Amino acid sequence: HEIRNPLAGIKINTQILLRKKDLPEMERRLLVSSQEGIEKIQKIVDDMLHFAKPRPSCFEEEDINHVVEQSLAVLQVKLKKANIASVFEKGEGLPQLRIDGHQIQQVLINLMLNAIQAMEKGGTLTIRTFLENGNGVGVEVKDTGIGIPVAHIKKIFDPFFTTKSEGTGLGLSISLKILQNHGATIDVASEEGKGSAFTIHFPAI
Ligand SMILES: Nc1ncnc2c1ncn2[C@@H]1O[C@H](COP(=O)(O)OP(=O)(O)O)[C@@H](O)[C@H]1O
Ligand SMILES: [Mg+2]
Image 1 (tube, protein in one colour):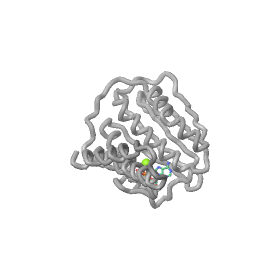
Image 2: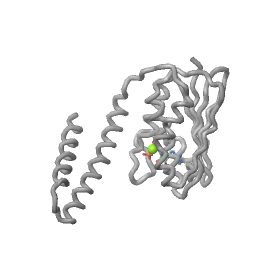
Image 3: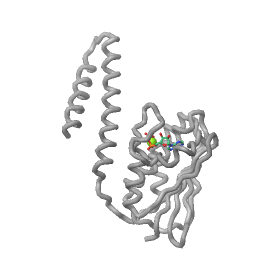
Image 4: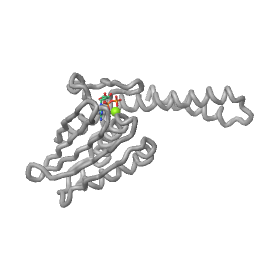
């Protein structure tokens, strides 16, 4: 809160100033750009606080296909803008999972955002859910993007590892933490220039 409150205060100040009529164009632009900067910092601070102190999971029986659909819905506009087709290969008759739906949605959105960012020229995002190992469930998030160099594969789950100019490097580390808390695992297969596939393995209830 020592960081969050003053930040929120600054954001409100810029909003108030922006409401002024007949603001010179130059000043308007400076305010808008300050506001964008503040929003970026807010996102990073949120991510870092989350990483340091994750919210306790609230486990409930959930239908994983439903969580995938919700996550895809959140990203519809981004997918369209990025010229990315999305395919959901929905596993039938999957057992309910004991998960925190919000946290797993956060994980799926992180993986899908990475996939979108890896497909700057468009491509296909494929999500597949399937039964495995008796009554466990697998969820694969696959893209046709730039892929991950072999030398990076070991580091991508490390906090703050990023290859993006505006990345925080926290998405995968937070996701891994959440999944471990669910007794789930995640693995990655990738080929440079072809794409990547992240697969989550949920244990049976
Ligand atoms: N689908 C993907 N395709 C290519 N590279 C990826 C993909 N997902 C993750 N990465 C690599 O892993 C790094 C870490 O990802 P992440 O923890 O989400 O942080 P960020 O997205 O902020 O960089 C990325 O910077 C990128 O190099
Ligand atoms: Mg990311």
